[in-house]
Image (cartoon, rainbow over all chains, first blue to last red):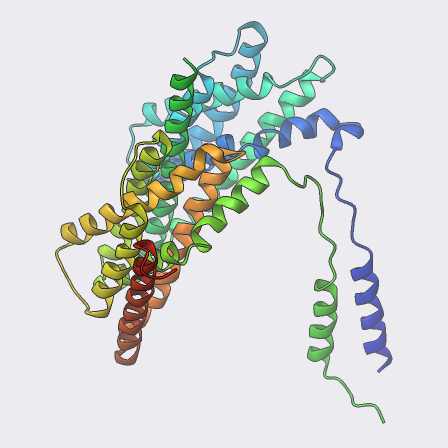
Length: 205
Length: 204
């Protein structure tokens, strides 16, 4: 009975002391690292193609997917560095949505891509998202920390995504179909929002 | 005298007490992404005419078996996106609401009568209806605070409804289950008919 009471007391204590959600990590020492890591994760326009890229790479097999693990973070770095000396083109959002649609369609079709095409896709996505994220840095932002955080985030998402997708594909015949259905969802989102962006731009002249 | 509680029950009770009063972590309330996903996700769920038609797609796919079970749910979002573009563009397509209701009737009847057309015919039928469902969703897209989040929400909800239909449709492996699936199809047809009467103004 005592044990039950102790358990209940512990449960009540746990229940009544919810942790504080530290949403703004800029106040901590490595704040800009976390800002860089979290920034792309709060933008579905970046997270969706990252996951789609990981699944697409997994469809190509582990040996080919390893190239994406290497190429994508390096391209993020190159994109971020390029943004410091070059202006981000105004067509960047459109290109981002084209990537969402294209990667979603490739996953939906379970496309077998030549290795150079797979690497090129990873490089284009990395360059674009690296530059887009770097463009959000303010004058007070620690660039080294922010860019490091962004690259760490990209590396983690793509590597874990590839690993998870490869592990998931080892099983029943329904598993590739489930991933392909997910790809069709990503493609649908990309196509519709791309259409919206283009029509909005056309209307604005 | 107190009754002894079994260890498993105690653990369950403790876990339940831990889980119930958890305070929400309100880090970014009202952000565009959060609200966009939620409103997009709820859009197909709050329209019963959309909802039953989406479930019917999954049911019919499961009833038709391989490859329709995966061709229809993969094709639907892509064709729906085309309809979404029409809705975004503001092109006026007449009779959208009646056609959405008719999609429920038609797909429900296909399931109820266990109609087994060739795959291409099933894909065309589902695709045509997908255009109208996409059109209705697409009309809402320009109003969304975060268009990507809204689109993610309604596409995921649509996919989940297909999955629900497929999971129910797995029952066709058993005789009683097959009858239950056909009954679901008939019920979907009735819901579609009700909404058709509403869409043409016969009932309020």
